[in-house]
Length: 229
Image (cartoon, rainbow, N blue to C red):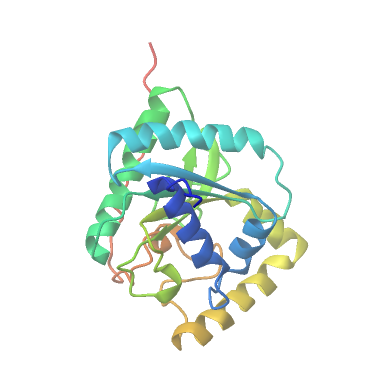
């Protein structure tokens, strides 16, 4: 009798997240393309909102940026997978922004600057998160999400290069991709996520957690200035 080697928790999470993206009903065609072309990097990150995770993810994103210095328009994603815990939407949102704040603080301590092609002010339409001088659009996923498209089997933060969205817009591919995603989202849940806006029409910070944030919602993130000397 042959005994198979038990999968590690991170391998189990990776398989579960891959299956979630591969499912026929999953709306994001970009994520499907990235997975099919081996352009997704899965990283086990431990506890969501922890400083240990922040350090690991900053180093991981620096390496990811080097690997895909010029990614072109073929989608590519960095998926941070966290320990499986049950979170409601508000708690997940709070931990997401704590995680990003800790990542930013550590990145600044390493001497990184904000990507000057985007704003560091989350109230501005031009805002995008930045690590290692590279802008990222962040997508939060977790089992407690009200939107089915965001209901991943474990908490995840997906980092996509902001520059790829700009490149897709320049080639005219972005609108058709977005329309496809919206149609698939309607097929999945009967409606489009109310927080989704067309790229550049509102601050993307409102979209990161996936929760339908209030009209007067205030983003808790604030940029830190680099300390010299």
